[in-house]
Image 1 (cartoon, rainbow, N blue to C red):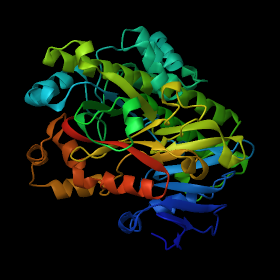
Image 2: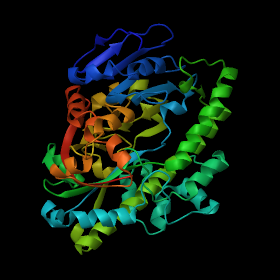
Image 3: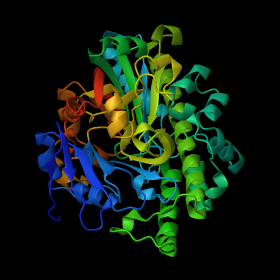
Image 4: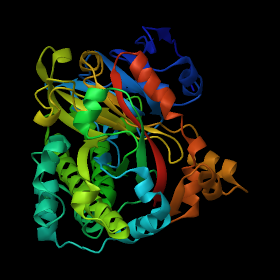
Length: 479
């Protein structure tokens, strides 16, 4: 990795001054503890490369869970001018609208603790998981087109969920401008059979409980009470979104030179906003994002019904309520005070939108405290619910971290797990685990990730967010 100058730039904030082809500085957030592994990671080089893209505003940004990715680092944020700026599929990622949905409940941990194995088995039966997993509701092209156009509302119309939930989903569960016709036949074919499935890697369904409340007013409004059960779902657009990204990368890699664009890393291929390639990518990306919204909507419904069935309780007695559903990998046109109150194109890759109290895009139900920010940890340690601050709106385009962030590559994790039983280790810490593949368990073992507590402490100490609540896992389904 090339050497670069790192300058302290405030509490838990670091700056890489622009040099070479960089058009702006690169800024990232890290405690001293998180800085050490970052110095050995390619993420800082990637963050500097992002700073070289045309039309970038202010600086390229890295969240404290940042680690190397494709093109952009995972945990990277950047905003671009509408006139003279670009869109880069590497700034969104291959799993378009990979995101997290959290569901609160009125069930206490004692209500489920004796039935966790049965609950986990029922959830596994309800949600196909793993590499290439296929669902039980294969869609024809006409139905998939409606999914792409309507997102979560399409799933509601099929009987999955309740109308109030749309207000508690980013973009009300539907990005505008989606067009399945902008996606390739290969993308459509890959997506048709995967609705209602979890996938593999770091995707999961987690049953946990609220272990601590921080910001009491927000916790009360969010429906989070200490000791009560919560369910978290982490997944995205599956093969559909992956193919949309792959197609865009191949096309933009060939066409960007005709626009006079050169990049320091070919993975950062980009085209001007407003170009034909840009418009087609946004239409296909929005279609994939809406696929992901519908996917999480269906999975959530199936999971809550499975839990209710095992426990023998009614929906009213379980009290399951959608808290929020957030995107992690997306590019959007947004109006920001940091951009001089003008519209800019914000890329968030492995980063969560975090608009504070009073922002126009925060749902009315949460207007007094801000949009929920869901930050899962690894499958053996705690997770968090946060809200963003006005400082985040000014400094990070209203963005926060999206999770713990990888510490070990999957290859290194496999080596470290050799000869161990991660299942038994998690069980000894009170976490039941069901997984489609043992290899995934090894790749995703807790020590493969940073401690999410360190990540969140950095966010809080930098003044970007406030902890609403902390949760702990008790049962996890992995692909």
